[in-house]
Length: 164
Image (tube, rainbow, N blue to C red; front, side):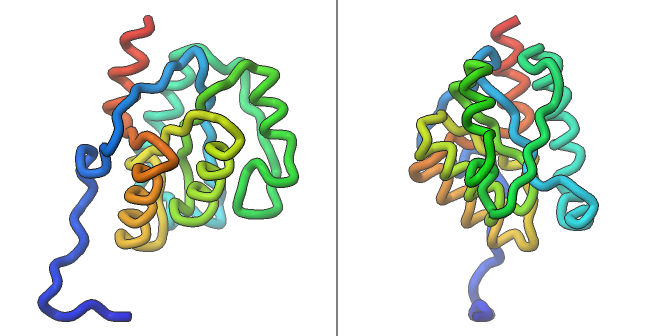
């Protein structure tokens, strides 16, 4: 449905806009989930690629993971019908940082599923991307309202720097 001509465009991301709650991730208890960053979604992922690369680098520098676990999923959630939860539990993971594409589909569903399974969820505002700004904004609002703490590269860098 088109917006009325008088309505303002959706605001660009302001990391404080969605902070209904604030908490920093603990790199010793967190795992980074990179959802569906693959050739098929390259054009959609492009705006988030620099932040995604920075987020991956920050997590690797924190030294939590000894390699990448690749999980093939058959639905929007990275948890449904996979062994992701079991693998994370074996590694002692209590928190997940969700990044990737599409924000409003696979990233949001994976984040909600992680929340329901008892993980503390951090959802990246700048290392996720989708087909429209409106969908991005709606997902960030939903996540912040009840499922996740909203983070960005700057927040992760500050949080991970405290632990060193």
